[in-house]
Amino acid sequence: MAKTIQQIRSHIDKARIAESLTASEALERKRKVQAEMGEIMRNRELSEIGRTKAVAALKQKHGIEFLQDAYKLKQVYMEELRKAKEGADAIVYAKAKKPDAVKLERFEDELKALKTELMLTSRAETAKQKVEAFIQKHVKSADDRYFAFRVRDEFQQIASPILESAGTESAKYRAILGDMFERLDQISLSDDAREARQILDLADSMIERGSLFSGLVVESMTETLGREYASYLNKPEEFFADKPDLKPDDYVHPEDTPQAKAARAAEEQREKEQREFAERWRSMTRTIEQLRAGSQASE
Image (cartoon, rainbow, N blue to C red):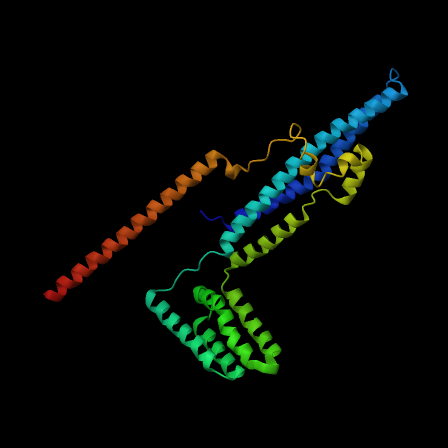
């Protein structure tokens, strides 16, 4: 079942919450380390060597624990962005509803004829006008999303003959055709699809950046824990790559638990059965109407 744009936005929001927690988590960890460090320094029973060893052990303990926290946060962050991408992708690339069969057949015939005419037209301006007239006729508003999709999908074949015949004016016509394609692209997308595309771009940029901890936080934790731990804050998976016994369990998104998957499968099955019942009902209704019409005609 496709997600709503609000549900997709919530995944981005949760990823940002995970990112925002890094500063407060770092501050809390810093306070703990400083408090325990103070106890070590005040312990008169420790020699200088003993204090050094105790401080090293303290940094190791908190360094590993904080990297475990960083690992969990990054997993939540990445999983929420993955869910956002999945949901947005489903909306952006959802198929537009087909028009009725007669209207669709007429459109496809005219589209085929247009491509043939463009192949036979020697003047780029004439060919361009033919394309503009075709688009104005069939793609008037967002209600014509399916036709906009179809013209956009065929646009390479539509544009090629125009550019080939443009000669020295190819740059001019390339720009004109680019504007046409952009308009088709906008019409082919619903408002939700346009927002979903923005979410896709945002999620991609956040994943590519992949840095939950700011430079200031990393610098602060370098002073607190040492570079051997702080340098891995934005890549904790590398720290645990050869330490499987220390690595936390991988995060399982609530939507990916066996229970959630089973519930989703059951819901999809119910929706399928409802669609099949509705189709059988429509088919039966059409049959009854045809029989009734035949009976009336025979009378």
